[in-house]
Image 1 (cartoon, rainbow, N blue to C red):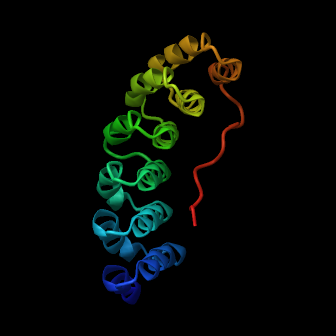
Image 2 (tube, rainbow, N blue to C red):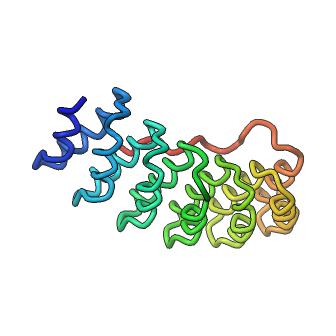
Length: 196
């Protein structure tokens, strides 16, 4: 709907632009990817960038991967976290490098969501970096890395899971054992819902 895209680009009120980004995703307007991508890259309002990032993930817009990769460097922790979620929701891109870099983000929330996204994508290139995340100071990040490694079928992932059997946290050791056995139903929460 071109009118919503125009409102997203030009309305002076951030709340209106934010609701417009949400509306574009809700109606499934794939033609809005360009307008949403511009909002993610350029809008001064973090709430608008956050909702536009979510909208790109909801639309499953593979054309938005480059914009979402850039959003992993946004100044807002919430936007970076949502960008990782969106990339995991959209699925495989050319390479997991931006998500791997996000595993070193200062925010545990971003690191955890990046690990989830890499596990959802299941790219063997991410197994080594996910294995390094097993040393993260945040338990939730380590648990999500275990889940991700369990969804990454390669020798490096299996070796990292074996190493995780030595983690000081019993819950994490049990999760590693479960992942090595093939996992069964996923015990971890689904991707993050929209904050609003």
